[in-house]
Length: 222
Image 1 (cartoon, helix red, strand yellow):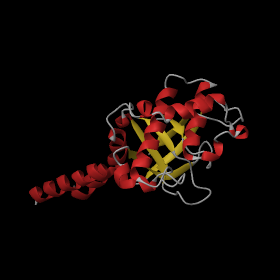
Image 2 (tube, one colour; image 1 turned 90 degrees about the vertical axis):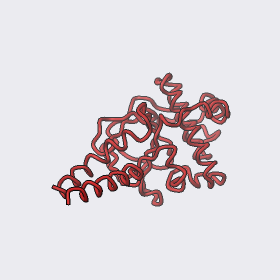
Image 3 (tube, one colour; image 1 turned 45 degrees about the horizontal axis):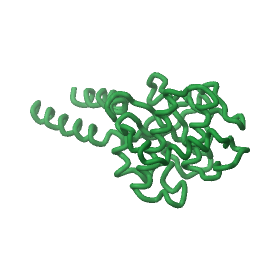
Image 4 (cartoon, helix red, strand yellow; image 1 turned 180 degrees about the horizontal axis):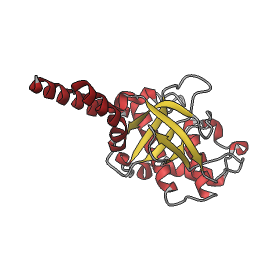
């Protein structure tokens, strides 16, 4: 019986490791930095937690939805590799008429990752906000050239730079993850965020998601 239980545990853990990103996570917005774009809208950095983790610095890529500090929601944390099977479950999919294929969605997330990587070295305004407005514009063309929504020369420059292939193709996609809400359909659904994960891709996700599952497994087998 013990051998059977060990074999079952090994199979179950293997399945969890391969499909950990399929589990819903609890996302909470716990803070926002002091940067604001020219229209007065708060921009990167945002601070979120995933399943009660320590605060994680994030960049919002979703201008048309809103969350407030302290709000929690259900979502999923995707690595770049996860997009192959899940690209239609992201904010990018269908955000513009051209973003309906896997290659198009992969490219725009490379561009978003590149912009967030540039924020790491430019964390203060006006540059930080210009970077975030450019990120929003990649998924919402209504921002382009619309000064009432925070568009300015700096945002235009970053927007153009993000779409240069030699820039976005240089990004190590293993260092970033996409925190997307489970509810992508309603007008009141939460925002999507990009996070930087210096650990190997998926390590944070596995560390947060499997702790609770491990406790469950131990109780069932004990």
